[in-house]
Image (cartoon, rainbow, N blue to C red; front, side, top):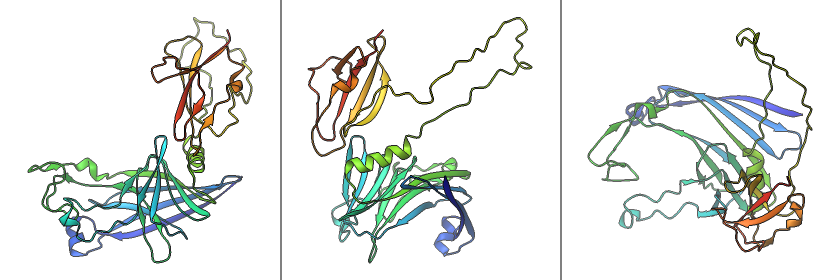
Length: 320
């Protein structure tokens, strides 16, 4: 069961940089927004669709909160990054060649927290964010897209004097104006705590969506089979199957086949807690062999401690 809400928002904006400098709002951005909440799911799913017809601009979504903080939290591989929000910019030209703006990147999730409450936003392919300070509460700004018509601009407000990337050369990038239809997805969750494990669980629940497909018969008109005998025998299978289960605060990072041993797979588990965890290998008793290996699949000392914010690779061999 789910509930959905469809919204449409429109913004009056300048068509290009020339009209922007003149303060003329001669274009319009239309955003179709779909909000979906599934029963039993603590994340509100958001989908934004738009057709961009404006040059040289940025579109962001502001997710408001009732939180005030001086630190932003974002996910990176095997770790959380905590960064200062709204650095002091007074006299920055004396210390920096570029303005130290707190526009940051994330591998998936962005969060802000205060005491016993937090706001977590997961973006599907959305990598840039900024925490906007407010008088009484802060907001998370997600960058949906940015368009630009050329590289090599001089004397920008945040980068005076130096060209943006290519000195003394202007490279025109018409395709980077992103004049096309685009779709963006992210989720919003309110939590009681914003520790590493909570953020990772929300991130995995949203981003690691299981996939399925429908098996279809061949089209006998286009695929002539008169000369062949093709037998589509029924192959019943279980609706659910579990290869193994880990009843510990260790998260599944990946599973891949072994390049060295036949009938074996490599399982990578990640410790997103603040304490060392000891992997209980009796959870893999149904396999023929369990070994700890490194990234090159070389066997290591069979010690099963996983430090905080670290991973462990194990090679499990099937019984044949």
